[in-house]
Image (tube, rainbow, N blue to C red; front, side):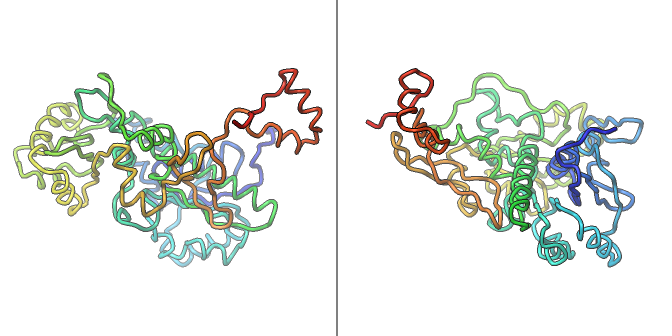
Length: 403
């Protein structure tokens, strides 16, 4: 007999693809949730057609897809068909959770937004994952992992001091986003158990990356100094050209999964087309990087980004922690907060990354001093002041004494 799991009886309608959403729903599935993965007929999740090093399992299966999709059942639907909408909304009547990470507005346009599900089932918990929230100056930018590593300070703090910024050798931004999605979903599920109310949960990669670099951001913002990279570092071993970090006249840019031919068109050197072959793009990636870098170095960061974004190349600038603290998208989303600390004074911090419609997070207390709330908590537990004093004298309890 199968052992009982924490999320037995919980049903998830999973519209997500690639890494962030699927990792989230896999975590839920591992805990016992019935995850119904809704995919496009034929091609399915985009990750089914993507892999590292052109390596496939069993001749056709992507390790990338297999990594994030265990414990699920697949339902192939054409979401544009009215019959599919009828099926989805029928499932929604008894479902608990919806997860999706399409670009903002896509699901609502198709008739699968939060309000659509809420009309069918007011108890539904609807979790959306995005790159940069659902509004602001970066709304049209691609929210890809390496781009976020560059935009949020992580890349600038990683790698060799005498080399380029180095991306983390894993899909770190997406995995952070997945964890935040699970955190928001489970919080909403607990709230619903108490109140019967569903809600919308929004998670974005930019907020998440800042939240998971809280100590680096707090140090940089409150001391006015950025980290200096050591003389060692490593990049991702599994990707081919042009995926990487490139110099410009005044900084660095990241270029993610983009058609090589399109990038060559922007840079204006047709001789590079000799490399436009999947095998060469991987086997000769170091040589290709050197040639591309020599060209990108003749551009300003702003001009190169403008040219690449105009033709839908996935790219972004590399920012330090101090620069990202003043980033217009960060400011727009309210990613930076503050609190008053009894010793440190006014402290700028990264705000909570998960936004919930019914139970919003808030910064209400500073980081505590050691034992600052010992007496308060012990009183709540029913201990008398005499007993608390005794425990303190015996060394069993520590309590902060205000100066």
